[in-house]
Length: 313
Image (cartoon, rainbow, N blue to C red; front, side, top):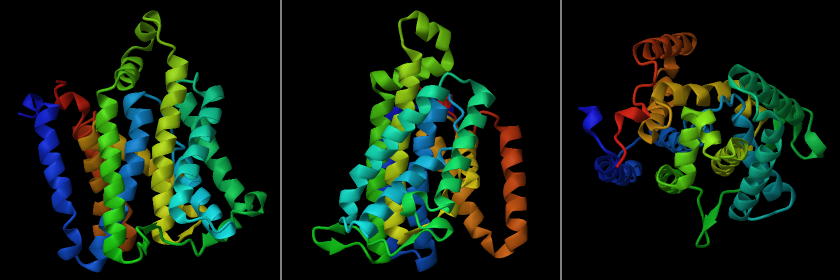
């Protein structure tokens, strides 16, 4: 049945589901509203991971770096230089894109596990630099506190409902951009490179340039999620962008389904929201989480909702 679905049949239900979710502040408790707000941010950064892994086919195990660059750029500019929070977001995205493309140039020629290890090293270096108070502005292991809330039409998004609507609005924009990417020449070229890089090169595609571009696009989207994270949480610290976060993002795409927006959203629910529900079990929470992930990968090695389950139209 799922193979008969096409993308147009999924768009309207998806829009309806997103619109219905906007009513969450009226029905959810404060705890679950906060989790729903976090879901929007992590879904956005998971989608950015999917650009690199699911669409370009590159094993990026350091994606939390770009999430962190966005968060720290907003934190530094808003606290040390008194910039309005919203004004820091484009700068955060630009810095992350430039950093990602500069870092990708020497490593993008690596394949498979070699690229995975290289990006893992980048993540370790990033966290180490933050811990050591890079350039005297990152705050060391304690991070940065006192980051203000973004203001829209002169009103600061301080309340929980306003933060929820802000995050879900940005997520909606991110989903639209992913929808457009799937239908663009760039999106089709990235999928061709992932499927058969040799064939793409034979057709005149400069695979290296497109891979660097994919890193830049993924970093830009991840940095927006990071800026949003800093704005909503009010503080940032190195622990939020370490190796474990990169592994979680990687696992979300693998378990949900590579190259599939619906799969990534489903993966975010399973890998992020469900563990929050088991938080009361403390020690056993991650045991259940790990077993569930193993079962999912054995039963559905291409992800629970892979791209091939949706027909192109």
